[in-house]
Length: 134
Image (cartoon, rainbow, N blue to C red; front, side, top):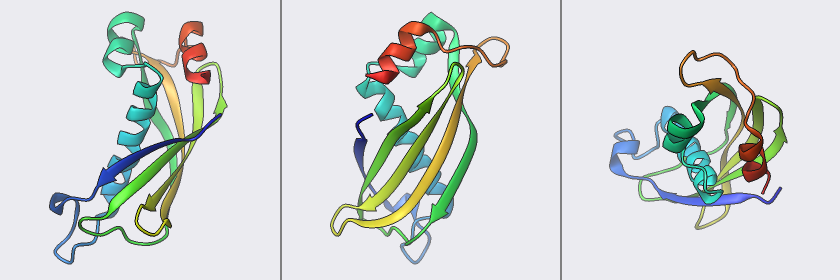
């Protein structure tokens, strides 16, 4: 699968008093990139709930913090589909500083498909599997 890349700017609200990005903010940046990855595949998460009655939730995440991101950095966050199962997917993500291509953080994310009503695991609909695989 081709890698998806999304740019984001670090704002003051993302940082501590020293201008370094809070560790929890990295999770938000990774989440936004995954959302934009789905949008690039014409998958809108609100449509998933309304039309297919499913949602994707993070089941497991392993993050490695390598270097700090700082105020005003432009970041490039990637999403790579590693494995697509019947009710979950494994994604690999990396975050780079755009100016010098320095790797700042990486993550492995397992997202599960749940019923929007019961929050129980459900199979990913075939039409959605095709869209994700594109």
